[in-house]
Image (cartoon, rainbow, N blue to C red; front, side):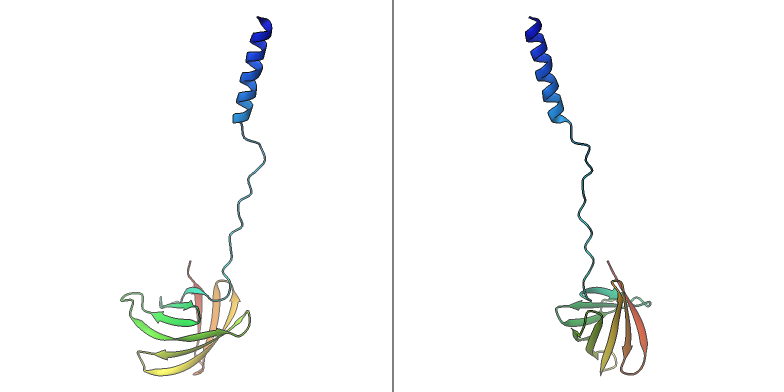
Length: 121
């Protein structure tokens, strides 16, 4: 009877150890950093610009009205050239932007005006 009792205790102990997880820490996947300018950006005034598959759009945040549209090319990992039409002023312009970090884009229009866009998450 002692053998049966011992075997039952051993079997119960083995079943319990199967329920316990290991102490090894789980590795979480590393967060992915955005690549290039694809995505949504905003200027300090809240104007939102979207870069998607070579097209560029700028919209107001209050009415979501389209303010400007155009195309862009990324000539290097850090340089972006935008060709756009302002629907407000009915003018065409070119803008060169430098991707200074994954969250900041410094731009200069062909008129000489400068502005900064910050990536929205």
